[in-house]
Amino acid sequence: MSQPPSKVADPTKRKRLLRKAVLWGTLVITVLLLGSVWLAYRATTIVSSLESASDLVAQLRKQVAANDKQSAVLTANKLQNSTIDARDASEDPIWTFASTLPGLGPNFSALAELARSADDIASLGILPLVNVYDSLDWEAFVPSEDGTNLEPLRSAAPVVGNAAYAVSASTERLESIDTSTLLPEVAQPLTSAREELRSVSGTIETAADASELLPALLGTEGQRSYLLMIQNSAESRASGGIPGALAILTVNQGRLSLGAQSSAGDLGVMDPVLPLDPEQRQIYSARLGKYMQDVNLTPDFPTAASTAQAMWEEKTGQKVQGVVSIDPVVLSYILRATGPVSVDTSKSDVFLAPGLPSQLTGNNVVKTLLSDVYQEIAQPKLQDAYFAGVAREIFVALSGGKADAKGLIRGLTQGVEERRVLMWSADPNEQSKIRKYKISGSITGPSVSGAEFGVYFNDGTGAKMDYYVKRSVQLTKQCSKNGYEQVIVRVVSTNTAPPDAAHSLPAYVTGGGHFGVSPGSVQTNVVAYGPAQSVIETTNEDGQRVAFSPHFHDNRPVGVYAVTLAPGESKILEFTFGKIVQHTEPNVAVTPSVQPVKDVTLATESAACS
Image 1 (cartoon, rainbow, N blue to C red):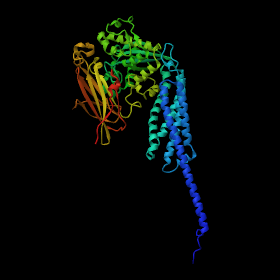
Image 2 (image 1 turned 120 degrees about the vertical axis):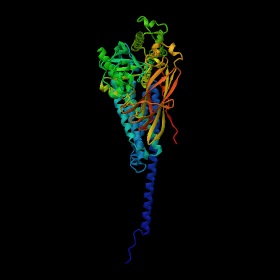
Image 3 (image 1 turned 135 degrees about the vertical axis):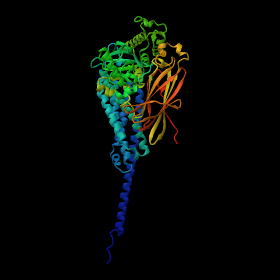
Image 4 (image 1 turned 135 degrees about the horizontal axis):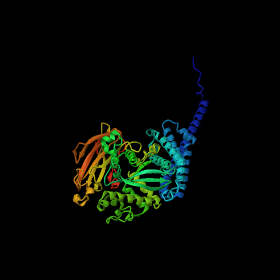
């Protein structure tokens, strides 16, 4: 039985269907072509707008650094207009549809997220911050006899906090994007944006914490008293130097004043010894809780500061709300902002010592305090009096409103970066924020990067010879072993004291041999910290393996080794750390000394691996 003829077989109908198919195909192709052109146009808008925004951010940074407030506000508004253009283009319906397509879709959604985040950061972060910045008078924040009006800073705190949240949220969204499936043309700008935002996010978070903390710390809610320790770098301690000079620093509505002044030696011996963390007692001995001079044998400043507070309060009966530490190098930074100070010779015959300058400047104060004073003043009590007098004169100049605002902020910021300015608050809520930053001097916690090493120096001479010791510290990344990272920490030390130091330098400086070290020589206990969970495998001195004291401090391996140097002698000490689980770029923290920190910490090297 034959089949009926197909309808399609009808020539007329077949031609009609063919024409429809061609028309529909042409329409689809046209739509796809137009869509592609439209998407290309939108992509060009997004990319060019974001590039313009990036250029404006760089321009904005320069204007803020130059304190050009008016230009900064105009640039911030232009920046917002650029990010709005990028966001509008990314929210186009065709672009949104393209984001759902398999294959290329994630590239469209990634660019859309980049545009959206850029606009959130500009609108909710940068623009409010610039407007707040425009309302602040930085000159007014300099301490003066009339105090400091910190109300504008306190009022700005909510705005800065909201800006920090907006930037943090945008950063998290971009971090969640999987770049492995993206085209290089999309993945590269996204990766660059992430790196930039990590830095910006951290900076704004710091500003938020500062705007919240500083008013209270500077006495807007009532007078605050801090124990001020001036660490003497001529006799090293892990966090800087022996806390020879002590004073009560009082702040009230931004007014600074120095109260009772003393020295670590005046406090005497703690009996019984204060309670100590067992790990730190094992590393640094009971001296940590016995003498004020030794509270900072540990590099962990919260430990040193809380111990110092307890000692001060027990011996004097005076309560303090925290501890602040600086060193003579920081005093030089302050003097560069205030200008020279004259030493008042009417207050003590100590100031009549013939070899000491009548004016102290940013250029001579370090040498005067750490070297000349010992040549010219023989008695330790009178040396302490001179230190106290100099500190008083500098703080009088600072509190009298003589400082250049930008210079002071720049100097104190440098001091914090170099770990020369340290702070601890007895208030747990305040301390929880402080410990996020370098100023806390913590050896663990959020201020310490995962792959951080530490090299700290404690004097073993019992004298002031560290003024003559020059050091360098360098990390060398070794080839990975069994999947773990390995790093050598190299410490080069040189005693630059004159050959006849035993006779040409005062016995108070050389120690006179009283602690078992020949006069002119210097002994240093080098303390090396590795990252958490790593181990110290070996220690070498001048290429020869030596025994060292191994310990742990809060899950970080610690090695201690004593280096002794005769005048003119150099030695190389190397600690090899292995089983390092962190794969991020390592960095090293060091004890700040007379040397510029940039001259001590050398660039990390990488061993050649096959």
